[in-house]
Length: 160
Image 1: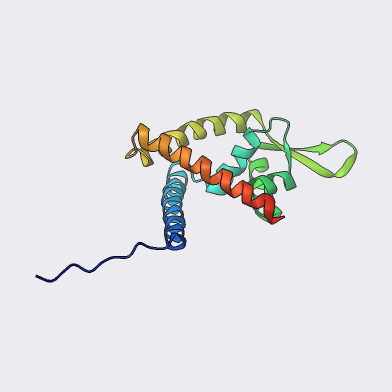
Image 2 (image 1 turned 30 degrees about the horizontal axis):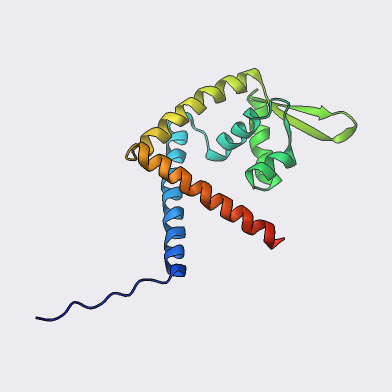
């Protein structure tokens, strides 16, 4: 009888790399499905949803640079989306007193109403997409991601 080959445990660095790849894959699968549903159901893009989401959290509005920083994208990406939202009556540009060049963007009442409906639908989609996870899975993963985010935040402090 031939003995089974001994498998060596992977170094932790390899396991961390494997974890990162699995995180990316899961994130992409979820994001791709949300993008498909937004396009199919509403003819929206995910960046449009994200801009409206950011604006929905800031009733007083946000400057273009604030939106870009919050979403971690360039101002150029935001400008076209805000232009279209404004043309559709979903967002409004408001001058910033004391700064002729600056404008704040905020959702109109129509934009708030539409985003509230789409946001509620988005929650249902995420619930469906992650429906294979039970309560223990979800709570455990949230705790682990909280720990990961704490670790990453700590490391970011030392990198500066």
